[in-house]
Image 1: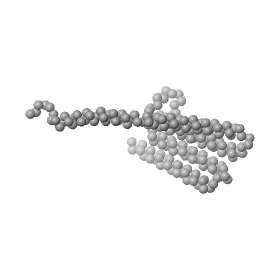
Image 2 (image 1 turned 120 degrees about the vertical axis):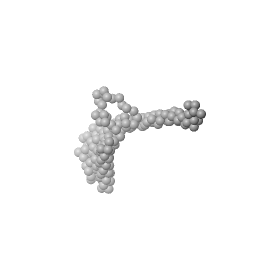
Image 3 (image 1 turned 180 degrees about the vertical axis):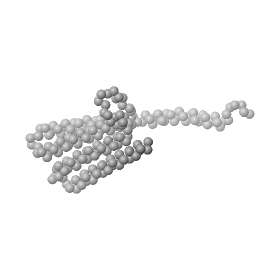
Image 4 (image 1 turned 135 degrees about the vertical axis):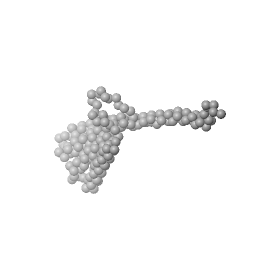
Length: 186
């Protein structure tokens, strides 16, 4: 009775695995390709960064043509506003480059002379910490603007700005600590 052919139930199992395998492979290919759905989002962020550059230039132009009328405090607030716009643009750049390189596709920039150093070790943990540090910097600028113009600021708004800043600071410390623990485990 043993003719060397496997029982019918084994043949059915093998054929069902052959059917599942190509379907599974096709599904995994679609799942992996879905990362490209994020590409237009990064394109949109590039457009937002261009708009921020335009906003920066408009604010700079306004400061330049009104420089004689500006009091020192107003000028300082204008400069802090420019710094704020620049820091948000830096944040956008980190998200665009880091996010694209981490989640969509590898950037082939190994030989590019202007390649940023932080790009060599970009990963989700590094991006999170850099983003948190950028948010703290932006929050610091907003807080500094409130302190410089304290006479015109609502004390309740200053309290909220301090609370938000401390929250960002605490979150960044927690993220860095968590990331450090994860690195120790690996």
